[in-house]
Image 1 (spheres, helix red, strand yellow):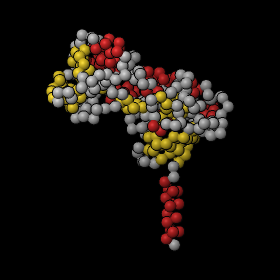
Image 2 (tube, helix red, strand yellow; image 1 turned 30 degrees about the horizontal axis):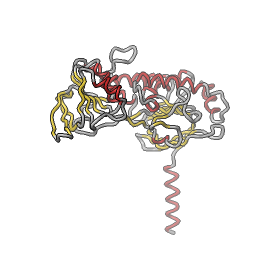
Image 3 (cartoon, rainbow, N blue to C red; image 1 turned 30 degrees about the vertical axis):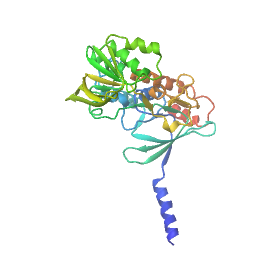
Image 4 (cartoon, rainbow, N blue to C red; image 1 turned 135 degrees about the vertical axis):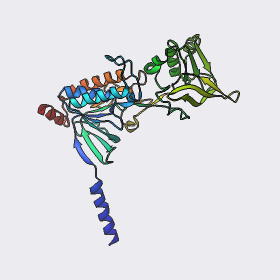
Length: 349
């Protein structure tokens, strides 16, 4: 009797908590500039995409208090820019959902079955399974952090992960770059054209995997100084701005204060592609593109930093999103059983 009751409870709970399913014409994963621009272009083409935004519509750009390199705007806050993109996507028919992606099963043969994406609502915790012939992956990348005191409290207030994005605020100031690879040299070289002084803080005794000629070219600049065998212990400041770092010299076992106005992290990023491992072709975690925004699987496109480890700019991500949306429209009339859904929705308008 107990076994029967237990079986009934299991079946009942499965019925209650079973994920709902839904067929959608285009599923966009990510609510940053890449995903929202793709949604805008899809909507204007008569396709009504579903956008899985995660917990932050607008993406990483919303963490920037001032954006000064977005075309057509002298200055705009990241939050305002994200809101503008969100509103435009909605006005063009996109359905934006505060859900997170928890499972991905990509189809190897769209003539037989569609791609399957499982999400969880960040509001109700309910799960949903989407079936779609077309997926746009625009989940971005998460910058690596130092995980030290002061880093989070001064993030975007003197601590950044992109010199091109935020270096312009520190013209004629003193800044530091932490990192030991080519990325650190690139950031430092860019900042050297703006800042009065640039420190490069390197944990090891030398730079890693960097061409010597390239290293010499950057480190010989008159306003650049390299601090080898040094780690950042803490970021300090006053109110809402950084004013110095606490460093530790590993060779001499000494700690000291270094006055700076900003710290730029050049320690890499982690693309949000874990769910696509062993399904899409990846290169160091980033999605490998075939032709423009096409991936290794038919009907799957990638846009923004999830497939771009180099530029890391909102405008570049937006351009990728536009290209992905324009490309996927060409797939609509090709032989594809799940694509019939897409064709029907477009005809309905």
